[in-house]
Image 1: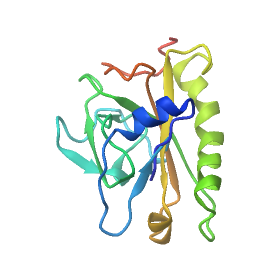
Image 2: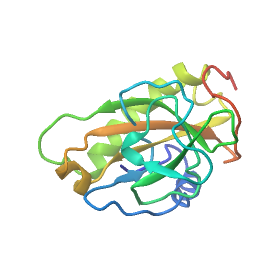
Image 3: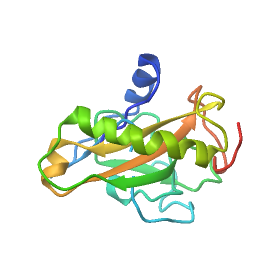
Image 4: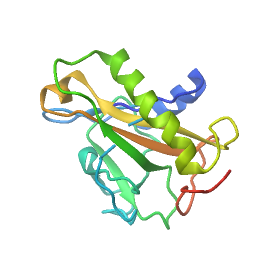
Length: 169
């Protein structure tokens, strides 16, 4: 999957500094992107221990501030610990041939933008938070990856503690 910021190029570059990892068969790119299964947000690992990017669930909190490019692992932490972002929505793209990076990113924007407002409690323009997403790459698509995972994070890229759900900021 790939994660892309939905705002300025500066935000895009900030997100891109999140870190580069390779995935043996397929990885996701980091831009905005997630998994359709829900979780409590407790996370499956702590600290710097990284989990497979495909194990991210809605409600998981991530220390992915240094991830960029094609990503195979990302640290999932308890939302009670300082973290970079929180997964808040996901969806699967239609089967078929890989539609191309631009089409995948457009679909991710259509998913993550509207659900951002419902998750944060304010419109994107009013909020002090931003979003990005993990999305399928051509390589991960060929391995069956169709998921986009949306993540929210602080505009100033600072770490947050606790869930961002209904934060209304």
